[in-house]
Image (cartoon, rainbow, N blue to C red; front, top):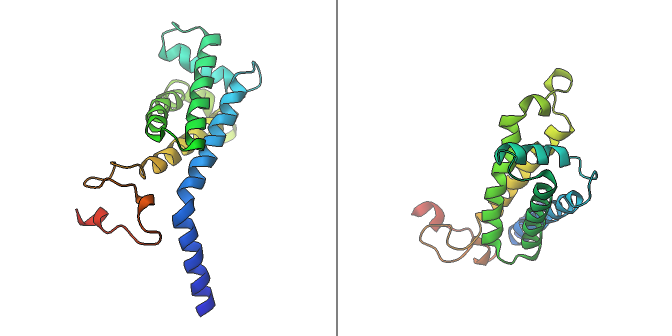
Length: 171
């Protein structure tokens, strides 16, 4: 039993030390990969939905071929910032803006996203659901940035490893 407790403690220390960085990198890789796909016409399964959503949000002011390049660039920038860990605050703000584009199809094209058997999500619907999870993961990463915790100047990851932050709940 003692060995199991030691193993549990070691796993916990590893997770505390590395899980946010792993999450940030994984989310960044997914954003980069899906962003790159959008640069190649007909390759991304979300290309048509991306163009239709941008058309609706911009009142058809942004042509589809330009919209897809802008969205692809935005996703690649977010991905690269998350992967490198540089300018994370900018990445988080871009991700917050991306959330509008991610959630818009849910309001604008609900019938198209959930018209599978028994209203199951279509491939496009699954894509939107995946994006919601990615943005939520990005916000978890954002919660560790310096200055986001009132009264502190350091992110939780800069605390002593394995030591809980007691000032989060005491303030």
